[in-house]
Every structure is written in C-alpha cells, then in structure tokens.
Image 1 (cartoon, helix red, strand yellow):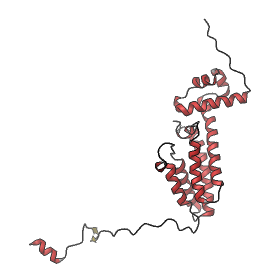
Image 2: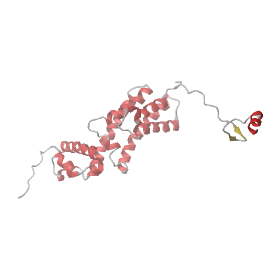
Image 3: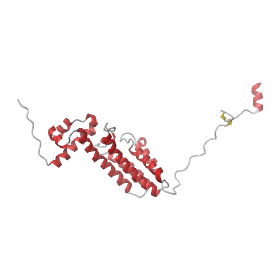
Image 4: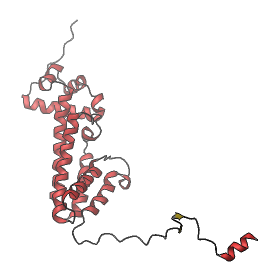
Length: 232
C-alpha cells in the first residue's frame, strides 16, 4: 500500500518563504541550532522537504537568513532608543530597556542571537559583531559631543557599554541581579554630561598601617615603658 501525503497549499514564492522562516524561527528558538532539524521544520510548515530546499539550501543558510532579520530588528530598537532623546541618562536606560523588551517578545527569537549554540560560527559572529559596532559607533559620537570623554577613550568606553548591555543579557532572575540592570547604572555614569558633579564620593579611607624600614607592621612599636613591663 502506497502512503500518500496531501500536497501543500500553493502560495506565491515570497509568501511561502516568509511562512517557512516563521516556522523555522520558532523551531530554532525552542531547540537551538543543533537541535533544530529540517525534517521538523518542513513537517510543521506542512510542506515536503523538497519544497523547503527550494528556498534554502540547508539548515545553515536558513539560520543565517533568520539571524539577519533578528540582528536588524535589534539594531533598529537600539538605534531608536539612542536617538529618541537628547538626555544621556535616558539614553542609557532606554538602551537597556530596548534590549530586554526585545528579549521579552513571545517568539523568544532573541535566542537566535544569544543562545542558539552557534555563537562560534564565523558567519554568526560577523553578523552579531556588526550590531555591536553599529551601536558602539553611535555611543562614541554621543560621548565625544556631549561629555568630557573623547577620541580613543570614547571608543573604548562605548565598546564597554555595548559589552555590558549585550555581553550576556538574560531574561531570567530579578532585575537587580541582571547584567543589563547593572549595565544601565554603569552606562548612566559614563554618559554623564559635561560639568555634572557625579555621585558623592565615599568617606575618607582608613589610614594605612605604619611601616618600619619599608615593611608594614601589625601595630605601632611599643613605647620603652611597655617594653620594660613586658620584659619583667
């Protein structure tokens, strides 16, 4: 007995490609790169594997196509947060909020960037690095214009801010313990405008232990009377 399968509903090629990518995005987000299989993607899309391979030559090409869309969306959100206000403190908080708002989408498609298991793939690294460079360049321009940080130092600080925000964000755990929350406070500090006094300094540091002949000792030398009393 020959097994028959119902032929998939015919769609325009562009529409079919979008549908396949939507299904594949969910599979990659759920199972990561290694766990995702073209068989399952085709089955969920209710198409045959030859139809899937008409649009994508393999899993790697399909994943990179999805990743391109995700990094473009993340870059759009971060650019909007940076350019949406002239207040640097609001820019810092807005940037962190944009990252976690992106991660909070029901599709959980942020996992394609941060948790896919393919982070060591050169093509994946190149795409993610492009987002980091784009945001770092915007922050560098802001720092050079609005703060006392300029030149190479502005580039270093900007890159540090990007790493704090994008280096390892996770949606789990209380906000006070999340890397992005800490990054928002630190980013607000480096984005302080010119002339801003900054937070108050802590109290004076305790005095250092005394030194004798260049070596630090545990206590002050005893007076002669104390030595005599100790020797009795």
